[in-house]
Image (cartoon, rainbow, N blue to C red; front, side):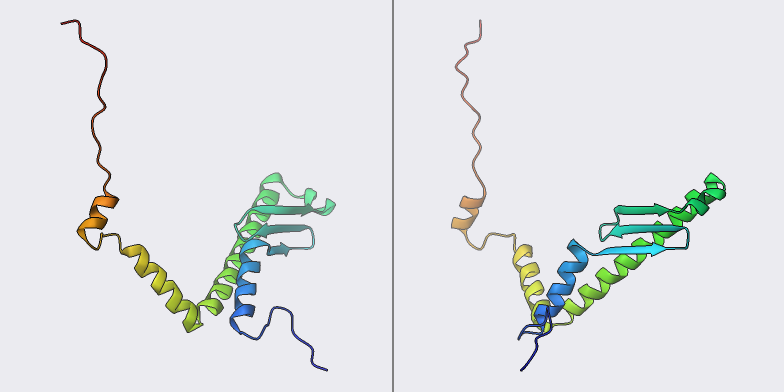
Amino acid sequence: MEHSIPGQGVDPISAALDRYVESVTSEVVTCDTPSLSVSVRADGSLVGLRIAKGAMAVSGELLASSILALVARARLESAEKMRSASAALNSDPRIVAAMEKIAESVDQTEPQNDSEKNLQQPRYEMPTSYLRSPM
């Protein structure tokens, strides 16, 4: 009996796409020390903060500095996970070709012929005023 690995279908691109979607949409990275813990999402937003009683023994400046350092570290780790997932996805030549095709189609902003030019450039006419001037 064969067991399948979650996120790995017949097409190897499925696993890379699943990892990328996970890293962008729901991955939470947590960094901690014995007395502090912070959690951030892929967008860098802080979603968790734990401060142990022992952490309160230091000055407010030191506590704030420690928290900010942990948040920065968690954001860097989260960004690295996203870069890694993106690199794995972009290593597939089919994805690269599709992205290039999309970019090319977006870059084609010039109309191809005169009939398209007329369709893409709406005519603007000054509205007629029904008010009469006193003169």
